[in-house]
Image 1 (tube, rainbow, N blue to C red):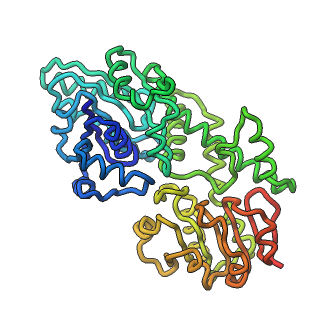
Image 2: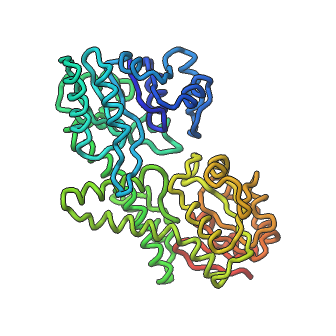
Image 3: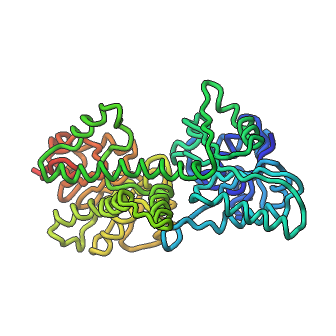
Length: 445
């Protein structure tokens, strides 16, 4: 089948490449000329495991193409995916300007029937707005082409997006049009062979399903962080509590790891957008408000622990930071807890030596040249000359450090671990102080 994808970010590029990999003819459209030129040259603008080979191979096979020509994109296919950004507006609502701009472009260039598939994360009611924009554009042209707007939300995890797209847990399709349902079932047939993963529903329910899923996962994270803070005050061990509740199949182990809060491009934005949507219909989302409040507070926990240890005086201190991306296997630093920590440390007069396996370029882009930030080439370089070590992202490379070397290197022999990577006895056995989340604090010996 021929498919057009508007937008070459995480969602659009991964979806387009995976659809091309099963044999569809995919044309990806973006207004960013530099990005399209780079993609044509085989340069992938984001770090996502497995994506480079997928894009390059399918481009060489002629199944995946890139263009900045919107008219060419609309003419290419009856099936048009909207995968453009929906950044948060100042009031927390999702900014739909890019989605609606593509809708106007489609109406301007349509030369026959089209199925417009909303892949972007959009508030409930967006399909109606897209429908109205396209209908208005067609009316201005005085052409009678038929079209349908379908909701088909994505459920991709950054760092595992390719696998999630190739082996989806579920495929949500929101439409009441049997013809559109048939086309989407045909499109997704290669991903739906072992058992039926397609879940059909109305458009608004599909739009809400995406937000509900992310809000539920964010809720689990914030709940676990709240219990971790309580465990510390009660003298309990949150890791034992986690294993105890995770063994209940009604709860499970996913998303119940205590830490320094959630970040990235999805959870913070989607929780805010769902809160805004609720208030628009005069409903106060008490649980969602609490989820956001806890996460906001949790992102300050590491700095508070460091500041307390140094009695509020961090001037002249050098803090080693391991991990800058909001999660492993990505270079994404949007809403990353590391940014809250770095900026708080700088405000308190501390210097930072930081390392991340893939997010160094992104960190430099965000913070440029600062006298109080040194981006280094490896984890050990970060701790050279540092007073203490802080771990913010749970990269595999950080899980088995040389504790003896750290004890010899860190001036104050302290590790502040925001991801509970170690059993406290390990660093303590080498004379290191160890502060984690929801567990008793170990002071250096």
